[in-house]
Amino acid sequence: MAGSCRRCKAPLGGVLGEKAGALVNGLAALKASGLDLAQIQKAGETLVQQAEAAAGPDLTNRILGSVPSLKSHLGLG
Image 1 (tube, rainbow, N blue to C red):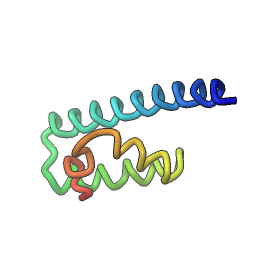
Image 2: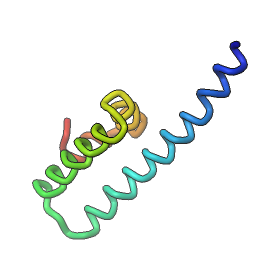
Image 3: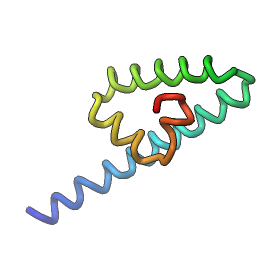
């Protein structure tokens, strides 16, 4: 049973890494587009709302928590 539990965590870690990478890339694109801080904050709020709707708040919080300072870059805290 313990072996199967470890196998379940590995794919989840990969998914979290992919999602975090996508968030970082999206943030870089927003900054490169010339948006001001208020616009980036609004985009960040919308992004988090969409992520929560698609993946649920628990997974969304885990993804946001896996990238140091992502919330502050999005103006979320």
